Image (cartoon, rainbow, N blue to C red; front, side, top):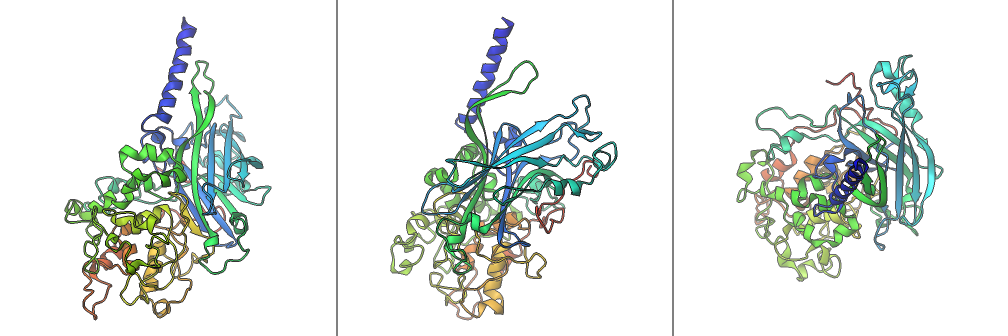
Length: 580
């Protein structure tokens, strides 16, 4: 009878696990505990994804996928580690003519207790969470995989000086452990997997206190400061990431053949059966995606609670085809708090962020309004990206969807180097005219991914022009700096390699995305804010509303640790003995 009860408990736990995976709320994940189900499975929870041209090795792209949110550095005796029975994957799409991934990197981790007689994690040269991994690569969309690293080294947690440096511990330094963990795959990729300082920075306490960002009643605080994550970092030759048939050298800095989409995921087995012997659970069945992430903050602040788990169950390619999610981008909730006719007065922290309700005295981008829809099919949009013969079926799909022209493509397709998606410089007041070429990271066959044009040059991190505002600052320079705004030539403007053209570790993505919701991208192409008098030939489009948006701050503008200048770039994890 006792055995029967135990068996039924095991079956019940398996059923419960299945319900969690396939119930109406489906699977969940992404940035820092933003969806209900994955919050209960932190080892499989994506926190952030980064993709950038390597500043010290510009012939390569560095991709970073972080997992396990809010790791306390002093989290003993069972410190955080990559999970077993989880597939951690980095996905790359490089060909818009074919749906799905072209390249997949798959990590599988195993853990060993070298000295199970002690409760210490590290003692006398032995580790009780000794972690190793295998790395496999697919270049045919997941149909087959080649093992490229068989015994990858993961450094232990940065517990403290006695555990790491002393003779009763490992007798080394943590920097040496990081260096020893940098692997080279048989196919040439440089790889690191291990603990790191969380490179994300945001006042989590403020933003989730009903949009109190920056805080109106006290100083801001980095909600993930002095916390760690587990990072997977891959540095790959650009030639490896190019789509089949692409030229070895780009035609120019915006070559569409050099655009890639990057996203990361974690998958678990379909069935998990707990047992009564104290051994680990048995995991069987098909692999099921339980976490994914591409663009930062998508599932955290764009997708509402009722859809978060569902969003996370989809691949980007399934998401693009699922139109029920589109309205959260066409009419984002955050825009309601940037509109005084809605709930703007209830969120005073967002007062500098005001969306265009009467841009150029004609176009209303308030939620539920028509934006540029009245131009649908007109001569004004002929030959532009809004023409149905070009990309208009994607970018002007219907009335009442005002942000289909800016927020939706930022998250779902990237932006093409086609009017109107060029800087207002040279447009002569007509936002639909050709202007100064700005960016091309258009890859329209998938949904939420980081999109990066690998041909875009690197802005040196020590350059006085480097800015954590990424493309926002590049647009400001292109519109106001005499070096760039005196012509309509295609030329590199500093920070064109910044978010959302990929994502650098330093990029202040929270600030950039809030500015984008307020309409700063629309302004950059000539759809200026309401206080611009388009009927006055002497009026400057650099109005107070625009300046308010550009000078808006969340109160937290940089990471709590300096990033490394060489691979793996992420900062050394916080030590358990240096954090209270």
